[in-house]
Image (tube, rainbow, N blue to C red; front, side, top):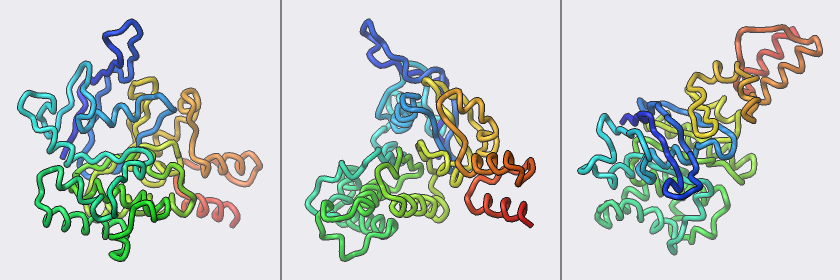
Length: 283
């Protein structure tokens, strides 16, 4: 599935004397099994952009196309779009509401018209994909740890079998172990299921490690749309909009200034690659 934003604008409170322009002439394409990082300072338009992706918000101007069809055309089925484009909000565990885990994850497929039997089968498959044991299916979601709740919430979206999975700060509020588990889970789903992933994050380290392409938002506009290496080579540009490069690159900069290393055109974006560079300097 391919989503295309074609000169999309969004103005909140457009009919009032204090309109707020949340998106400004945004054009981009999402699809093809990519893993995309979406970054920007608070208020840059990241969440607004993603809520347009499955029709939760209607653009003030421009078009959003799903496989070439305008999702706001008269006969388009946006209900099915919301199954194909799954959106996991920040702190999704706050949306858990059923009496037990399995029933909660069944809600999405049932809402799409699946039979109780089919919905349960999809829910069980999704829970297994996110690593929730069968012994936990009958538990109240509120008996689970923070990381487990997050997994159940993600399973609720996966049970609708999305082709594009959008995650808005999926590791917010989790401890380091929980962060690692959730990000490893998302990467595995992308790799094994071929799901297109859009990771909305404030963590430069996370998008550097996982994304194939990074979108940078600033004041509602798409500022950059490039590879991680290209994005993080623009340190001054990022700093001007309140962002920075990953800590691994900052560490290498410090070591170079201390005379340990040399300038290198290669840009290690993961801790493992950074360690290899440092070891090569020490040899």
